[in-house]
Length: 202
Image (cartoon, rainbow, N blue to C red; front, side, top):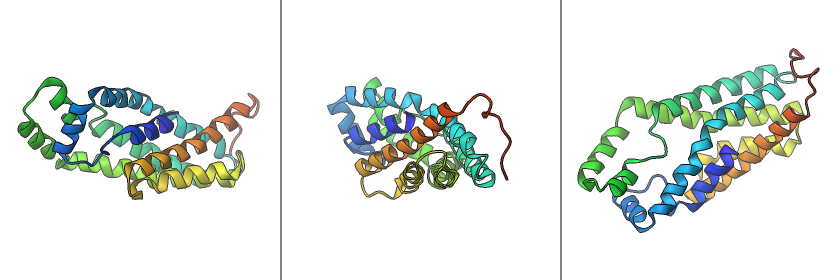
């Protein structure tokens, strides 16, 4: 669900996340309601952390090392990103919403992006989405707890996300990754109480 909603945000965003500040301001001023909807759609994104736990849990018996590696990279990066980055309410939105000075807020936005801690949070978050979800997708594929194509969808959807040429295609990639998470959720729901906490096989 969180990855699906994030994919929808990418699809309905008229400018993309890396648009210049003045271009983003113009888009927000033209359709402020759309950007408010995008903010609300991003609220459930924190559920990606329990979704990552679900993948790790259902794959840990068959491929414990791969499952653990994917969980560490993914959960570490997601935690850093959610803790260190700004969130869905952005400076360009607040400039329009609160009638703030565009020139000052442009400088503020640039200064925030140049902060080393923010850059570190962004890097770790990207590693979580690319390397972490790639490893989790491979674990889902190799564990055979869900159809192989679901594991491939999770691996490919996450890994290719930052390399897509447009934000619309990147959003589609996130929706592909959401299919993989759905596979893990189904596998978890099918696990009986007796089999839920069995130790790893290897």
